[in-house]
Amino acid sequence: MKPKPFNPIEMLHTDAEISEYLAEAYQDDDPATFITALGFVVKHKGVAKIAEDTGLNRESLYTAFDGQPRWDTVQRLLKVLGIRLTFAT
Image 1: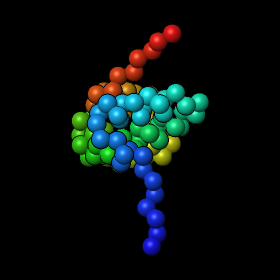
Image 2: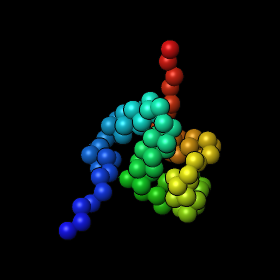
Image 3: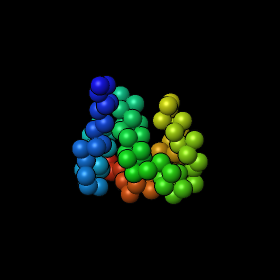
């Protein structure tokens, strides 16, 4: 029996937990960590639904997470997910 790959998003059940997960990923020194985390969240919420809500097609949404998505794509995804970035000093 082949083990199922670990997906941390499966352990998160509320929007607050998902938001904290993304905030932690954003703090990582490697920007790919945040993009990977955002991809997990998009898949968890449903790519078809997110694609419809953002006006992006599913295929481009999947391929966006294979590389570096454009900033406007990230912004659209965060908006649809109800995630707001805040900055503090």
